[in-house]
Length: 237
Image (cartoon, rainbow, N blue to C red):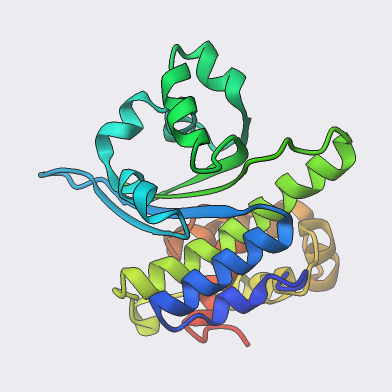
């Protein structure tokens, strides 16, 4: 679960730590710039954007401007979908935003990959990596990049929630059953729901039910995020 070389972001204790981990990940993946944006939709009031990035100073201010999101086709995709988008100049031309691409291309934002995690209570996490050279043509290499970004996004979102929005629930307020805890523990070890069912002597469907219940109780969107939160709350070890 926490293997793959990305788990150090889970240990971030400050905004600087988080930025260092996110930038290091992006560069290791072959991208020059990265932006991680925590978005909070307030019921009353404007949407809040909290950005961590390594953008050039002359460009970084635009990352937190809500007005830019209304016209940017990449951000519009992420606003509506959880599927990653691989973008380049044609993405902006198709959306009638060629001038926007030309403006950001001067700073090295010519192509990239971006995705969003949509969380409960109007919270979202957007992670995008960018560079000034074309992405690899080999589908296998590009697929690996997207998969790595998806895995890292789950870890980075949990760290961002803890570091930037330090309102962590009290573990005593989260009541998980023994089966739900066991299911999370085995998921942490990389077991599938089918394998969890075999280990616990229950059906795969029941194992899925335990994981789903635990995910909802922990206010998470998937079992992987639930494992991370359970670890942070010291519900599992």
